[in-house]
Image (tube, rainbow, N blue to C red; front, side, top):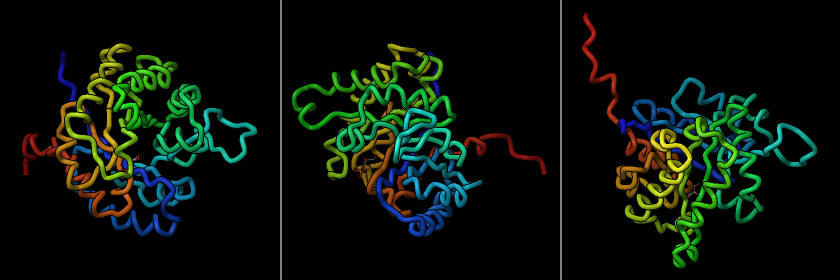
Length: 267
Ligand code: 13P
């Protein structure tokens, strides 16, 4: 098996926080703090109302701007919804799909996600598909079953050759916003299991697909989680709301710049 180096992704999920003005202040504080970090992709998943301002302010920087949801249809009579082509036209880079808050509070189903993930890819958006178990499911030894069901159903319509274009975020629901982070063993085990599920579909895709951990990631625990073999980054909620801790998590994921190892330029 060839060793594939996956570029880590640190994505901040702001959820329903920040007006446009607050978002502007934040990005101005963040950009200088992450401009020198190499070998890591950085994304901010922001409310719809912040998208245009964030895209304008982050243009030309290393920060990519993502949305937090979209409808599966390109257009139609779906009051209050936003489509993938609408996001693409704004230069939005990707979209969070199936966050447990949307599944739990807004009735997002695996059936809808099975349509949303391919619709995002078809429109040129990078989907971050969230999966994860409740505390009760973990206590009942139901974690593998839940993850298998979500991965199988949500990615059913994505062809093997496009599977690696999806980012998967493993977010155990009991670790979200609770300060109770998964242990490194729990995170590695679940994420390796998800990678094995992708391998059942396509081995090559499993080597390339990026799988993030999410749930109470902070500057203090980021390095340990990000060092795990199968963990390719983090989806960060609370700690992404201030530029400083978010930049510290980005720094924890940074890899030494590969250009530094090349031959010295002739002067
Ligand atoms: P917290 O980092 O606040 O636990 O949130 C995680 C999350 O839901 C990211 O999508």
